[in-house]
Length: 136
Image (cartoon, rainbow, N blue to C red):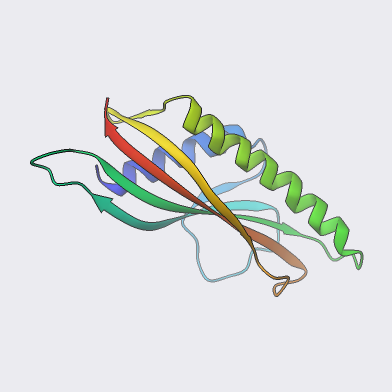
């Protein structure tokens, strides 16, 4: 299965799940200066179409918060709360057996990486998610 319907369905699920935080599909090189979630495409692997129509797409989900507070724990706590919403949304996507274009989606959260505080006053993290698609 092509990667775009996978990202589009995942985007719709996250947008519906995280509340008022904006979730965008795709990003640019600018560091966000507001709360938000950005979904980025990673590598895709397509199975041999003669044997299987399964595919796997890597997705990176960036979580961003902005805090000019000199107490860094303020930004950290806001980022942790946003990450928790996103992780819950990823888990529900995986558990609900999402159907996208006649395929069943399974998602696995592979890990979370912080930004190393190099973009202060913006603070962010990147979650790595693998989405496996197989015909329903």
